[in-house]
Image (tube, rainbow, N blue to C red):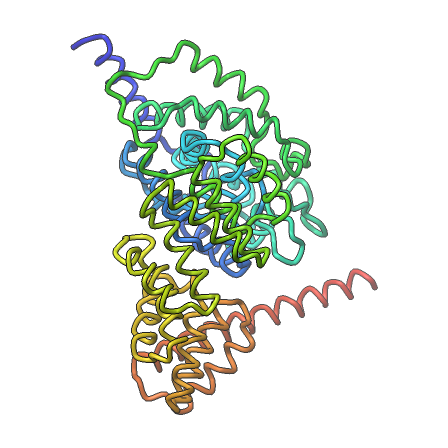
Length: 484
């Protein structure tokens, strides 16, 4: 066996052994799975996730490629984009990995994103999350899940996702469980680099990503209180990673995967569709002056112009992007959407026909096709396509339920109209109105499957409503007791 092969074998053996080792002070795997489940329920209630199929697909593909290098894991890893302009990422209980929209738009390459995601996977695989919360295992799973969601993700009411400062009864001692130790961070960096060296990504992406975190200090990642830091010691981490990567040369056999992810297109899509308009507009305009032939910049700027209600400029930039990247489905999708939203239904259908076969973009194209057919009063085609959309991506397109409700209303089917309205309001977080429509649907709904679905969902919402009212009453009683 050659020296390089020996080193490769030893590295693989160490990786397997280290990821198979269970820390002495970690909550059990079943407890962590239950905590992860409850945590995700809280996250979904917060409506903080960004259900953009393109960005989510890119993040999942990065995670999938890195996970393929690990031994069998006790958890099913899941990857999510948080809809907040924050430079952060974290691993939560049960191997749920989160990257903030602001992180993706602040990075410059798929290697940097892969470096940070590899680091988070290493945290989960090493069970650092379970170690850090073991000291609070005396707290109920439900309470702990809510506390974690409040700290790590925040709520829409306060508008601060990553850097939420915990107030009230949650003392620093309780929330200290969230702060990974410097040893945890070092281990996660070292294992993350091992993953990256074996993957198609460059491990140097982790280093440049850390440097961006340090340089940006975005929303006080370095300056927030220690008890809500998820990643302490960025400066020392940079020095350690630089030492590890000193003299690193990628092997000649290392595969390349950069073209598979289209990172720039996704980055500028996120800025164009979801970022704060004026700062994003200024940044993309400056960048385009330096690089006028960049299709991704024209794409993002076109999306921003559309949000500024300047249709002509939006179409001009998207068409310029298309002239550079001919037949690009991401560009065609947005052209079709803008045509549909501006009343040019037939033109929208012609453009979107080229996107429909795409595995990820196809469902998005079908939503806009359905909307175009609805504009053309072709109810049958619209209904078929909207049903296809909700089966595949309801969280991304809740309006499909609303449109189905309107179609059922036109067809004089109030039971189905109420059913779809109930689902629409549930997906958009208006729980009281959802319960009202589901209750009305159950009075006359004849479709057995839909009846059972509506009944099950209504029972779940009623239970959650009762629990929330009981919790509110408990807090009010405690508050009165403390005042007295």
